[in-house]
Length: 120
Image (tube, rainbow, N blue to C red; front, side):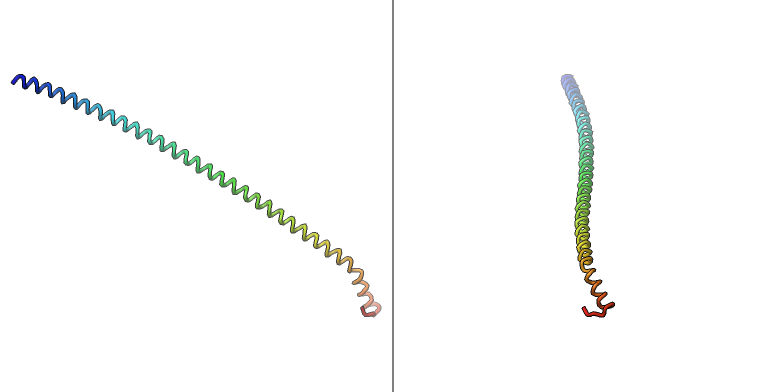
């Protein structure tokens, strides 16, 4: 019986060592899981910051492109307006020249009809 007790005591120490080993491994796993969670959180934070930076850059580029488009449109509009204004000025000058050329004839016709009583 004492052999049994001795054997049983040996088994208790084995069981205790096994439980300690399990507890140690469990703590190691907890540390590993905690470190992995922290690393994942840091990665997520960096990814979010990078995504926000990319979005901000895209917004800035879109705004710059929009301003460039508006500037080109304004320049083209101003150019078209200048062209129409120049054409209108040319037409006005042409009409003034025509009117001046016909003014003398018109004055003669009016004078002839009113003053002299002659038909045209």
